[in-house]
Image 1 (cartoon, rainbow, N blue to C red):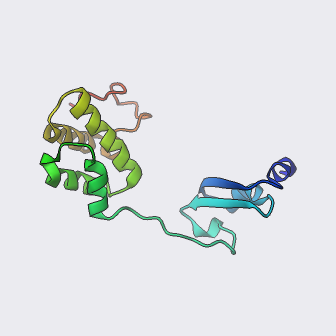
Image 2: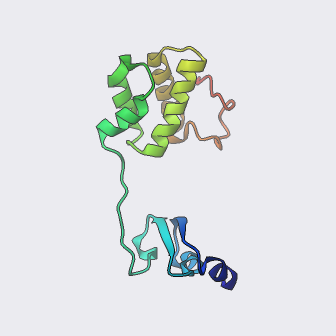
Length: 148
């Protein structure tokens, strides 16, 4: 802990401390000089120091989510894009993953967008929201070409 304090003492730095579940785990990262700022993400406000300002980060608005998911894809299936964005809860990270899958299927596999969306929906039906998680042992490979 002393070494971290020394390293941060006179630096202008933003320290990102992600997904804190326990205040004791955060404690070592609260060391540092007057120019050390921290961005702490957590699902439990009890883990934050009292002097922290909190900002709730929620899902995107439906129109923002559909715009993010559909950007750069053919615009002929907007109702399906909106429905798929809603299905994944309008969460930016998951939207980005799904968008990558759609782009792969439309651009590389030359699949119509409607079929790519049907593929994504079938994958979610079968495996839930972790359908495209690379740590999922049921995936058939990085391209995830088929869902049976």
